[in-house]
Length: 354
Image 1 (spheres, rainbow, N blue to C red):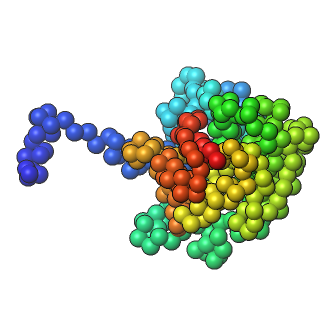
Image 2 (cartoon, rainbow, N blue to C red):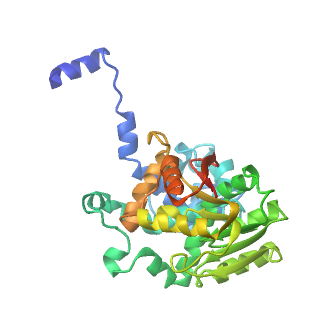
Image 3 (cartoon, rainbow, N blue to C red):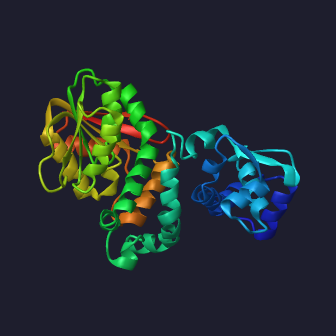
């Protein structure tokens, strides 16, 4: 092993080409992250809409009084999150095609809800990651109030609705992909466990008119789903049901779905839910879990691995998992076969057949 002077000499002479760029990019990644989160919090992308505005106009509309307004806007340009025409005070800023589609609140493809929640909650909580790794304890509201994340959410209707809408925004692409890629033709009934806004049930009913769907969640969540189902005009094919999925049997169905549910729980709870689904399924039925399934080698799905760390921050003993993990649990419960179906981005569907 060479000494520091030898290593520096090799780097300087090009004998060993090493680049610290990745280290710095990851280590200082909270800079661009918070820049984007603040832009979402300020409603910048929604305010721009399809327009093009000068920095002065933007500052006035958003009540920004800092000398750093142009650093902020040009930083977003450099991050490829805004486009700019011209230079200097007369330059005009506008949305990129991606921010116009995904970060303008008036767009049906808006995914900013998850970023709003990340800004309001997770950004601060992640400062406790080192403590979480040392202790295994969650770092969210429970540290200040003694109440878990879900207890806090269920006690505040506005925060609850913000949460379920945020989850809907990030899940929409996955649910549409599932509706297109999985063969629902041989099934008649679907029950979505932890259905939140009823989004998956609505998408399946619209895509497969023969299906009859049930969106199942806690009683406090049911009215949110009922409103969304009525707004979508599918109440003749989608109903709601309420209950605690740990307290009793699940509604019977040919297909039981769980979108981003299993990762919220420890192993015992995961197995309890999988067993409950097996018992509620019709013969030949299927359990479908939509998750950011980590690749079996645990090398590639960065988002899935980071989400598992987020489960540590939120719950302590909860975790994300691989397709192989899911297969083993389902086989233990009694499912005859399991497959993994890639969906959108880092997400996949784990499918277990009874």
